[in-house]
Length: 338
Ligand SMILES: NC(=O)c1ccc[n+]([C@@H]2O[C@H](COP(=O)([O-])OP(=O)(O)OC[C@H]3O[C@@H](n4cnc5c(N)ncnc54)[C@H](OP(=O)(O)O)[C@@H]3O)[C@@H](O)[C@H]2O)c1
Image 1 (cartoon, rainbow, N blue to C red):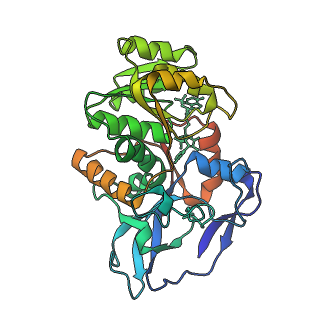
Image 2: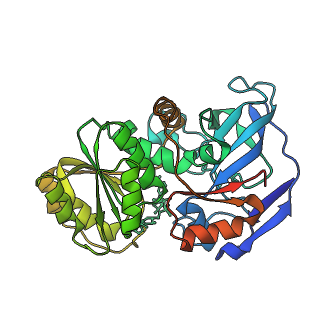
């Protein structure tokens, strides 16, 4: 079967098309014919060698994708041939505490990802794709969407009327905007682009702040909330924006530490945490249980992921470059039927 491998670290141009043996299912595994895959910022970092963990190569990239089950092992009970399934990011985190996750079982590195014609999935590491979504849409769910869901609901217990501050308009942040708006929260989004702020408002955000033209954006958040601040913060900027996030936090706020897009240097005053009784929490995507709960909410609210652009899957390198440099609004997806 055809697959695309990352054969050397240090660049997207080290992605190579290869022939791999057709996978066979083990007793509790299934084979899917991959229909679509989607990119996350993590995949770009792994390809260029800047991810915080180095994985053994060659590696088939991409944690996110959807496919049709074409073969099942003798003991598979959760799925049958013909089902449409998404793989999960964590291969062994079914539910409960993150202690169950086992760090070496993440799809797309170190476990081979889905950028191939067929893939082998453990039946415990897959969920049914929401039936109202196309393959292109369903492919985007396993990492960014589950991360936003896990932060706001599994951990955050978000309530209607609370304020959610979502930083930037990347994949995780746009899912957070859609989920928070559907749950009846007040949603404030930041972006470097006024045009993207307008588009985020069309998705349900109530207010937008341009973090480039207004570097002291925390003051704008306080103004918008009558001095109260945000209850839940989707923090993807990292140490550089964390200081502003703390300033924008309401008393008892939850800061979900998800990414570090702005770089890894910065400083904070711990007194800002102390004074407002802020909780800062790392978010490691989420469990299968979170994925399944999220899919029920997607179906009930007919929510659809935002798609920026779809590439034929054998043009994966162009898609990686687009995510890295094309300033997309929404997910970048690979169509495996093209
Ligand atoms: N912990 C986890 O489980 C987890 C899961 C998924 C992702 N992540 C991490 O979370 C981050 C976001 O991932 P993603 O897939 O959503 O990325 P993405 O889709 O590539 O997001 C890029 C967007 O982030 C915004 N951005 C860039 N620098 C920023 C800054 N300094 N402050 C605020 N926003 C900034 C920009 O929005 P505008 O163009 O609107 O300015 C940019 O378009 C990455 O660091 C990723 O590695 C972590």
